[in-house]
Image (cartoon, rainbow, N blue to C red):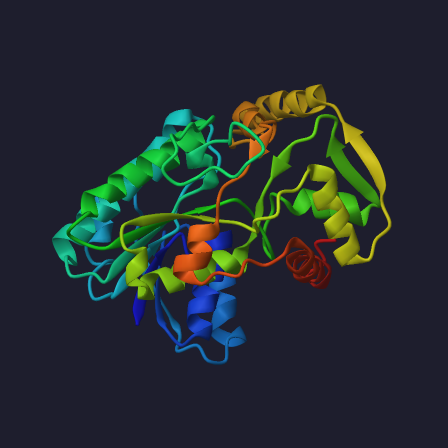
Length: 332
């Protein structure tokens, strides 16, 4: 099968490309002229079963570049998106309007597409109101412009209903080789520290390879047509519990590092100031801290297990793979 991936040079997108090539699919990667394609370039030699990767230059925020990109492919996995931005409107420019542009290009230039897979986010769902998994169909309550823009992207995908099959995937917090966000917890563990918030907060994680597997299965599963799925290891963790699992997987002894809420808020505030001076989006900002400090990030993954046959990777196993990768590549 010939499959187009947007955002293919990013963390999640590159793992999707890798998994597809391992399974013998033809992979078409949408990249910008300025894209850093080092992870994609590695795949040409690292994946023995790969038939090669085709690159098509384009940008979801420039509609004219999508016309040729979507032609001649059997399916599209839309992984492109912006996680952080200096201007809140930029989230909507990419995550909402970019998705709309892609949908319109599919309808005009490849209306017989087998399926579109949209990689959304648990942030579009918003936190659960209590210690229970949130269900598909419950009202969404995103707490950040990132989450609201991803939800707006989902609404744009709805324009395909009855015309081109689609599936929406909402991953929880993603970790795995090449990740730079949750990497900070691996750094703490490597230093012998186990960070935790003073108040208990519960969240889910998903190993990046599970997203790739879910996307591929959704393409071939008619039961997934027009449905939305949460993707996560269904075990809820507190931050300290997650750090313990990572420490166990890494074979490291750790001591607790309590971090009060005001420290997170101060870090987000200072990071925002520094980013403004540097002219770059902040890795941390007020909205990311707001997401981080929610009490319950929990969602029901049972429909993904049932319809897609997903058996999500447990944190201890995923952390072992991830920690080994960080060590091998000298990130730690």
